Image 1 (cartoon, helix red, strand yellow):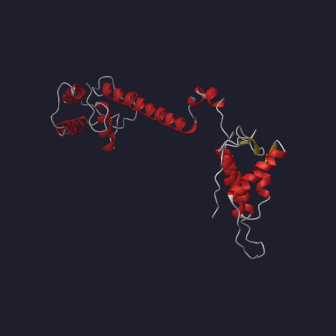
Image 2 (cartoon, rainbow, N blue to C red; image 1 turned 90 degrees about the vertical axis):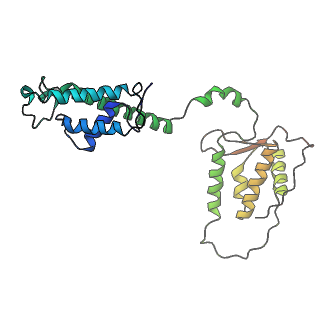
Image 3 (tube, rainbow, N blue to C red; image 1 turned 120 degrees about the vertical axis):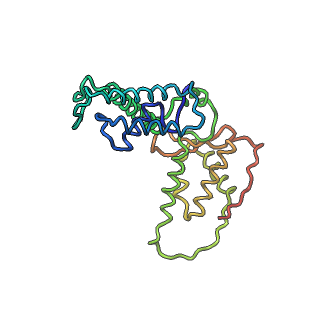
Length: 260
């Protein structure tokens, strides 16, 4: 069983936090201060379980032992200006603890870097899950083939044609254009030729109203599987072709009146 105190993963993590919080020199740790703060922190933990908190209690014993050794006159040497592990003498009882803290800090930083890299990779690179059922979906009959977002982009580009405010003012008249009418026009065109371009229909529109009605008519035909939308390559023209149920007379296309 492992005890995790708040945000500290082990006694070394707690010690490292105390050292950084007090802005102490890790190579010249004031054992008396750190030991007092460490024991004070453990006292704040309610109902401390001796079995699960063995690592923390072992570190407390190690700190007390180091503190006791530093009381010996033979070890009371000058410890000023210690800036690296090599400057700590072999007789210094704190050397082993400093080595443990430096190693733990390096591993902690490495784990944080790896975790951030994994997060970034997860946000940038998609998983390969879609490939598992690629064959199944490639054989699935669907009216719109290609990227449906290209249809939205094409619609936005054509809408810009009718957003030019520099045109001369004209008298606006009520238009009576229904989706049913445009659906019949699309089907009539496809009876004459095998493939027609969606762009041709859109460029024939004289208003935003008619443009939106045409888009809705094409989507209704796709929904009934009477017309297919296809785009072979990126940025290539969007083509309309006859769908699987193009000649199915049993399908009654609902007469939806566009009221925009």
